[in-house]
Length: 312
Image 1 (cartoon, rainbow, N blue to C red):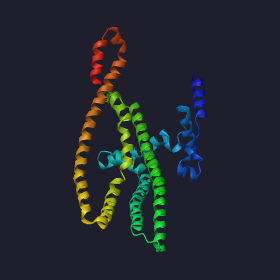
Image 2: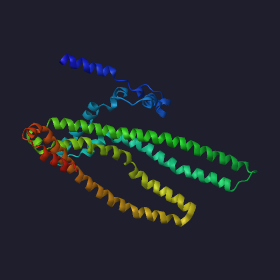
Image 3: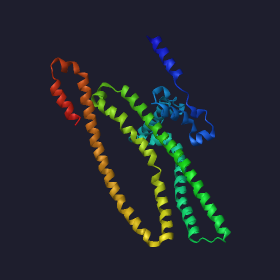
Image 4: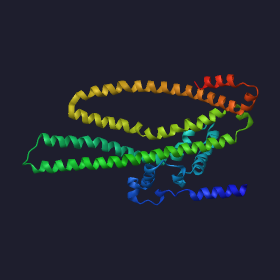
């Protein structure tokens, strides 16, 4: 039996396709041409598991989990020396902070290009408003503005795609590492800890809570970019239309506390939903575990009503 399992695992390893991004050239990496064969297969038929590429070594669950575990162990030892509670945020920042900070340059460049585009467009429109067929210098400037719009559009597309690719990949790494640590911790829980921890809580952590890292990594850089962008945009609006731009600023300032209030409301509702999800999963697990006794004593109707109640 063990030999058959070993052969099966070896066969699965051989059947996995090598990830083409490892051998892709600069042009293919820049424009993501290495995924074109996968798109071609998906266009012809439904994609299957065998069509997927091998996970990159940098994205493997074991390596990511062990790396974050080392930083977490250091944080636990440091917290014990300083007589405080260990913070998972510190371990995550030390593990992924530097590569994620570099991605902030991509995000900042994207926002700079977004601001430059309307400036070029305004200058081009201004040329047509003051069109003079004899002014060749203005014509050459218009060509420059048109080229700037075209190049900035291409640069914006490439930079934005690469930013979201790398930032989502960073979020995925954190999520995979957290799932590895949660799964390892769940297998090492003592009997007393298992009595205080339900299966629903573990499943909820692995399926819902860790997905928040994907959302956080996508938008975190905007916390420092948004104020800078707001100052630049307001300055440009003041230069173009004068004090009238303050009306739009007033609307934004009014909406910010409103969004904060709704964010807190949704957070509290999400917490209540998580409690109900834990209860539902725990009930379903108990029903499935005791299905023989339920069938033996013909308790299908009462338990069916109970299941319908928790799933409502």
